[in-house]
Length: 169
Image 1 (spheres, rainbow, N blue to C red):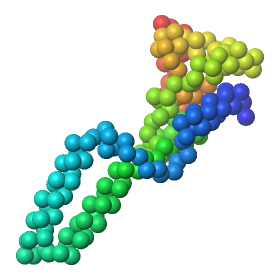
Image 2 (image 1 turned 120 degrees about the vertical axis):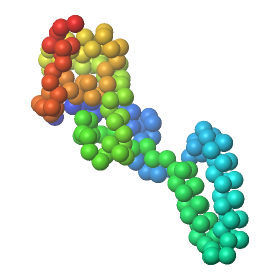
Image 3 (image 1 turned 60 degrees about the vertical axis):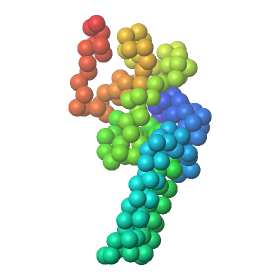
């Protein structure tokens, strides 16, 4: 395992531990606190539709029970949150995992401590250090995807080296 991969993996492990990312579903009232009027509208809509289902001659009580069970399942789904684990192997991969994890590697910035260790490490190439410094100066931060793209360009054959990687401003 090379130095850059070790540093990225260590930074991701720290983020996973700090943010309690374990990939398990957990109860969270965040949805209710964030969207109280939407939740209220859902309950009012359920009550109105429940009355219509109950009194409609072609539905009845059993349809109301089924509709209520479906409503409870859907409401429960909105009250669970999953914090996916960040992994080195997911960086730059665009497949079905993106639907679950999102493209976290594009928006999550590499911690400054990790960049400092990377820039001071003797086994890291000078060209990579120069690219990281240049990106930090121009962009302000370096995402995990940016670092992965600079350190492992062979893993991204569809992405040509951009102008800032060649040293042109």
